[in-house]
Amino acid sequence: MDRRDYVPCHMDTLRQSPSPCSSRPSSPRTPPFEMFGPVGIEAVLDQLKIKAMKTGFEFNIMVVGQSGLGKSTMVNTLFKSKVWKSAMPSLEVPTPQTLELHSVSHVIEEKGLKLKLTVTDTPGFGDQINNDKCWDPVLGYINQQYEQYLQEELLITRQRHIPDTRVHCCVYFVPPTGHWLWAGSPPHSDTAAPPPPPALSCPDSLRPLDIEFLRRLCRTVNVVPVIARADSLTIEEREAFRSRIQQNLKTHCIEVYPQKCFDEDINDSILNGKIREQIPFAVVGADQEHLVNGRCVLGRKTKWGIIEVENIAHCEFLLLRDLLIRSHLQDLKDITHNVHYENYRVIRLNESHQLPRGPGWVNLAPASPVQLTSPGCLKVRRRAQKDSKDDEC
Image 1 (cartoon, rainbow, N blue to C red):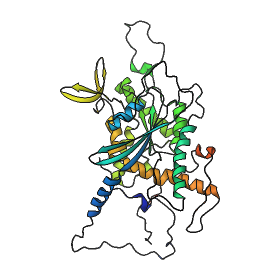
Image 2 (image 1 turned 30 degrees about the horizontal axis):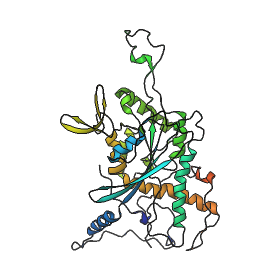
Image 3 (image 1 turned 30 degrees about the vertical axis):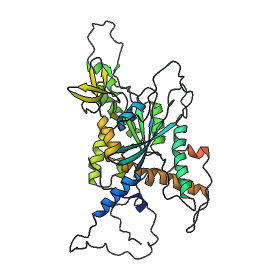
Image 4 (image 1 turned 60 degrees about the horizontal axis):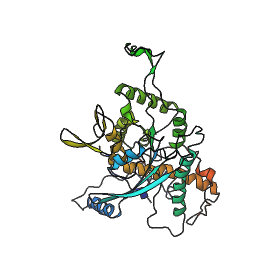
C-alpha cells in the first residue's frame, strides 16, 4: 500500500498562520498552463532520490510496556537485526525499582539507503506496586527531545542539519489479558463439559494504567498500540479483546495513530480507515528462523507447531511493519514535526513572554522539569487546510 507523494517539511503546509501578503487583494486561482512539450520536471524526483541516498534518514521509535511482553524481540523482528539485545531472565538481575529509559542507535543500510534508527526502551514501566505518575519519565523524555530541538532552532547561527532526536512513534504494548472469564464457579471435575458461550463473561479490556497513560501520551507523540504475545489468545479472544480496546479508546477520547483528522484526501481516508479497524494489532515477535516446508521462516517454536511471524493467518506483525516502515514512516515524521513539536513550540514561546517583532532571536530559558512532564494544553488539531486559496508571496 503506497502513500501519497511526500511534501517536504520546509514548505510548512500545515501551518495556519496568516501569510505576510494576506493584505493583498485575493486573485482568482491560476488556470492550468498548457505545455508544448516536456521540460524535465520529473528529474526532480531523481535529484531527491540521490540526495536521500547520500544523507539517509532518521527514525526514532519508543517501545513502552511491562517487562516480559517481548518489546526488545519485536524491535529486532521489525528491522531483522540485533538492534536490541534481549536480556535473559535471571535471578541475579533485580527488577528496576524506578522507570529507566535506555536508548540505542544503529545505522541500518538496505540497497544503499541508510537509516539511522534510535530505539528507546522503558524497562520498569508498570512493574511496581504503586504506579502513580509512572508516565512522567516517559513524557519528560519526549518533551526533552522537543526542547533540545527548539533550543537548536533558536540559535543565531544554526547548524545546517539539526540532529533530530524527537520520538516519531511510540509503540505501546498492551498485555494479553483478553481471556474469557467464568461467569460463575468453574467446574470442579476435569471431565465436566464446559458451559455454553452465554455463561462466559466479557473479556478484560484496557487497565486504568493503560487508559491514563494513553490519554497523556497521545497528545504528545504518535501512539500505535499493539496486543503483545497474541499467541496466548485464541482467535475469538483476540477479536473480542480488540473490540473492547477500541471501545475503551473511543469512550475516553484517545486518538491513536493514524488520526482521522489528518487524512488529506479520499485515498488517505480509505487506507487509514482499514488500519484503524485493525488497531490494536495482535503481534508476535521472534528473531529466530525455523525450517517449515523447506523454507526458513521467522517464528516461535512450540510443542504443537511453529508460529510464523510473517504469516498473516498467525498474527498481524506484517500490518505493524507496513505501517511503521513501508507506508507511513515519512508521515509519522511529518506529523511529529508539524503537529506535536509545533504544539510544544507554541506553548514554550508563549511562556517566554518575549514575542518576536521581526527577524531576530528569541531568548528562551530552558524548560523546567514540570514543563517537560506536562502533556500540554493544546489539543491535537488539523493544521492543513484543503483547497487553500491564499496566494504565495
